[in-house]
Image 1: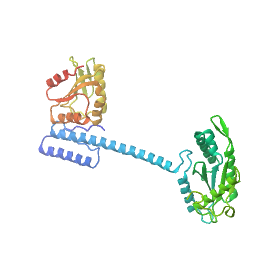
Image 2 (image 1 turned 90 degrees about the horizontal axis):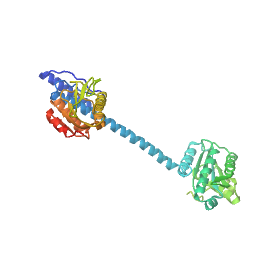
Image 3 (image 1 turned 30 degrees about the vertical axis):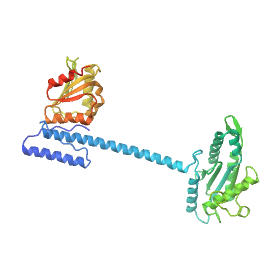
Image 4 (image 1 turned 135 degrees about the vertical axis):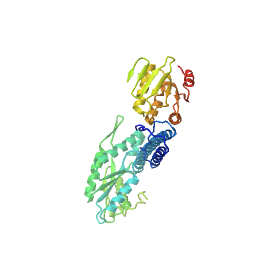
Length: 268
Length: 128
């Protein structure tokens, strides 16, 4: 901001009134937040010049304070937006693996079912549980267990498309929501690819170990039109896979597994 | 801007080093000054004193208005002065000097005087 120009002023009464009127106008402009308003300061150095220069200086201080306030508000708003994003991320993601958490999965699943054609939702759910996770934790320690879970999450994501959602819903339990899937065969094919990828040996601090996973598969449709029913069905199929051996993928079948119940699956 | 070993003359100011060690500055009458002018004055003072903090006598009576940026630069670079005496002689200069002291709030000793001899006597106590 450059300093205001200096103009000579007469000392007569009408000239004095004009100078005071100009200063009043500047004050009114400053009150309306028009901070570039300035009064001319004369060469007499008298009280009117002092008032004019004082108003100008106060205007400059007011402008500087206002700009500082706006800068701080913008800074705080930006910090708040970042904090909000971080909180939202934490609320919807698993801290260890970075995958979606149970809340985010449920939101996604519900939203997907609501948006879909009720007669043909075209989605499938995979319920995945590692077969030897406790052994890894007991043998190699919890750090190795955490590394295994992180690597499992990464490998699952490699097999998914952008519209699919992978979530960690428990210690070594993962749920995958497959989008745009028509049949159990399609869903099982994805499940087998994931199982194969998870079977590849893991390396941790010089150790190499192999683990398998049991996967239950449920395809939406018929009676499986609600979120809890589909997840419960995939969960029931996963337990069937566990009972039947290691590293199996089992497709939910109502006759074989019974009506899906979320309470029975431990999600109720 | 011209200079010899004890005086520097700028477009809007004249600044010189007195034999008693006090630096004195007179602004061109009624000319507004801004940040660039403040920087020139500070550089000139540093040149005269070799960068050592020295007492400063400022004639403000006929000085024109000074911008906020100029005032803030004088406060920011106040390490070049050990004390400042502002000679005021009319309502405008008194207001501007008071505003500088009370609003810009420099940390170095600073006082208003109407009499130059009184100002120099006070500055003697701040010779380094």
